[in-house]
Image (tube, rainbow, N blue to C red; front, top):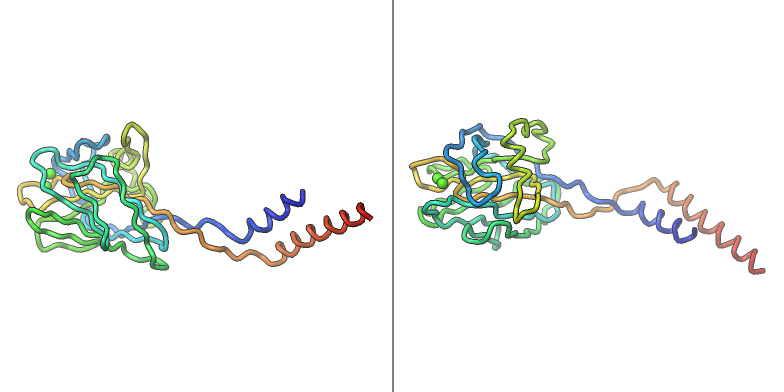
Length: 226
Ligand SMILES: [Ca+2]
Ligand SMILES: [Ca+2]
C-alpha cells in the first residue's frame, strides 16, 4: 500500500510530452507515375503537397525511415539533417534517428539532395529548379486533421515495411532534378517524431495529500510496533 502511494505521488511529477509533427501545406500537385519500389504502398499515391513546411514541436527525436526509390535508373539521393545523412542506396526500412534540440515549434532543418544534378531542396523552400519534394501522406497533424481523406494518402501512411505494419506521421517523396517527370518517387521517407518527456506541473494540494497519506501509514506502523 505504501509503495503504491509513493508511486502515485512520483507519477504526478512527470509526464510524456506532446508528440507530433505539424505541417503548413503548399499547393497540391499531381504525382505522375509514382512507383517508389519496393515500398509496399507504392502505385497508389497520385497527389501530394509540394514543398510543404514541416514543423516539430521540439525537443525530441525524429526518426526517418527509408521507404523506397525510383526503380528504373535511379539517381543517388540523400536526406540530410546537419551532419546526419540517409542515402537512397540503403535497404527499405532502415532508419535514421535525429535529435531535435530546439524548444517550441521549429521547422525541421532537412534538405534532400540529388547528387547527379546537384539540386538541393530544403524544408519549405520553393526551388528555382525542377527538383522538389511533396507530402504524400499524413498520419498525425493538428494543422490539417482531415488530409487523410484520400484513400491513397491513408494507405501510404500506414505502410508495410519488412512485412510489418508501420504508421508514419508524414511521408515525403522527393523528385529529382531530371526534367522529364514529376513522380516524387526518387527517394521516399517516412517521418515520425517523439517529443522528449517533460515535467508537467501538478496541483500542490494533491501531492501534499499523498505525502500526508504516507505519513499516516508511517504513524500507524509505529503505533503497531509500540
Ligand atoms: Ca523524377
Ligand atoms: Ca522517378
